[in-house]
Every structure is written in C-alpha cells, then in structure tokens.
Image (cartoon, rainbow, N blue to C red; front, side):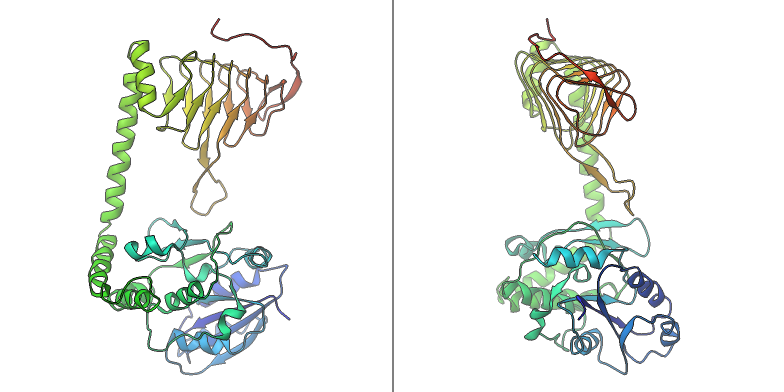
Length: 415
C-alpha cells in the first residue's frame, strides 16, 4: 500500500503538466500513488503525460471543475495520507519522503508561493482563528499540506464552490480536531490561477466559508466581504508592499540616527540612549564609539566587557556577550545572513552566544548561530562557523583549534 496518494487535477494543461509530473518523478524513498484527473482536455495534455509510467490512475472525462476532479481522485485513494496538486504546482526532490516522515507524528504546513512574474516570496504561517478573522487569510496554502486520509471519510468538496475550494476543506479539518503544524521546507505553486482571475467571487466564497465554520458570525459577513475586496485591491496595487517598504526605510533611518547619536555623544548620554534603544549593557562594560549596531533590542552585554571601535554587531537575530569579554577593533558578529541554497535567497539566522572571558581578536568574524565557549580565543582575521570549545584558541577560515588556553582567568579587559 502506498504511503501517500497524490491527486493531480488537469485541464488543457499542456504547458505545465510535464513540469508538475517531472517533480513527482523526483520523489524517491517513499511509496506514493499518483492519481491524475483530467477534465477531458482538448489540447495535448494527454499526449504529454504518456511518458510518465508512474501514473497509477488516469481519469479523463468532462467534469464540473476542480472540486469535481478532486472528488473523483478521492474515490481512488489508497494511501494513508493525501496531497493535492494542480497541474502547474511542483514539489522539490525528497518533499514527499520528508513530509510523510513528519506527518506520521503531526500534520504539517509550510509553503513557498512562487508568482509567474516578479520576485518569488515565502508564504508561511499558522491558522489562528482570532487573527484570521481580521486578516481573512488562512496563513498557508492548500497544496503545501499533507492530509490524513481519515479526514476524507466524511468530507467531499462541494460543487457549489468554484474558487475557494480548498478553504472549505481546511476549515473542515480545523473544526474536526485536526492540527496544522509547520514543517521545514517548501513547495512551489504559481500565481495567475482561478483565485486571481475570479477574485471577487473567490473573496465572497471565502467570507461565506468563514461564516459557515463559525470563524466569523453570519451577520458580520457582508462587512467582511467589503473589507476583503478592499484588501485585494490594495494587494494588486502593491499598497501593502509600499507601506512595508516605507516603514522599513524609516526604521533603518531611525537606527542610523541612533547609531550616529550614540557614537557622537558623551559617555553618560550614550549609556542612557543604549537603554532607550533596548540594548542591555552592564554599567561596568563599554561599547566604544564607531561601533554599528544593526537592530533595536536583542543585544545583551555582561559585566566588565569591552567592545572596541569599528565593531559590527549584527544583532537582528540576537547577540549575547558574557562577562569579561574582549572584542577588538574591526570584528564582525553576524547573527543574520542568507540561505545560499534557497530558491529565493531568503534570510536565515540564529542567535550568537559569546562566553565569559572570550577574546575576539582584530578583524575576526562570528557567523550566525555560533556559540563561543568560556575563555576561548578567536585569532585575528579568523572566521568562525561552528561552536568553539571552552578555552580553545582557534584561527583560520574556517577557524580550527590551534591550542588550548590556561583556565586560571581572573581579569577585566577594561583594566
């Protein structure tokens, strides 16, 4: 028996169906059942799928839309879990294997939303009714979900719903005790489908379904329909993106101003400003002029620690420096960077922890997620990617252990 049944709905999909099925062919290490339901395509869709021998069930006949196609697929499922794909969706290699391993314990949700035009973006989140009823968003996409087959013992897609087909099923799952939990990874879907071309009908159906499943009251549904339409217009006009861009620039400008003021003020004023900016710095420690701090908050500096001039503290994901730490000039402590293998070059980061009595020599660099043990020494110009053992002296790029330091430490870098 297959672990998972994959239902693919198609209609006149000659331009995209091969890309979708090729992504399924890359799903190794898991037993899956491929059910392809075609709405009697009049183009070359059926000809182009013939080379894919892993299609277990092929149905090609006139139907009443995606709901009808998915229902026909559900009548054929044999797997413990179910994944829905449209003919232009894609799965990265190994997606099904990792999802099945995860969902054996939990239902998972995470997605990548990939528009046809423009820069791709991550769409991920959770379904939280008290928030979603104001946002009118589910938080993630239907094709990113792996559903237990047991959900469909009592559910079929209503043919009366044309656009918001997936919302009814996901709300049904939520109302019947299924939990959506985020997993690592992404899948790919393209914009420009029925939800974009028939957005007015889709938004009305969306609100009606939220009322049907008691997320909002039926009396408030007409007001929500207006709000959802306005929101969609704002999205199409990129007003939200413009607002986000403006607020981001304002935040960067404010942070630059704060750094300038801090670096050009007297000691007492600097200390007062640091507290206002959310930087927790012990009274006995010193951050010299010329340092650049990348974010408000998320910075903790212990007792008797000295941070020299021209140090970059990229604290966007958090930095904690212990007691008696010495950070020489030109150091870079970077808690946030980019995921190089990501399809969209997304940011990635993790907090950095620098132990007591650690020494960061001139021009050394600490990368995201690194933990530097007590008394460790980072030699000049070194780049640290991995955890550093207590009292280890490391150097190079990548930094490796050169020797170990004496453990009898009792001094203050400020004296």
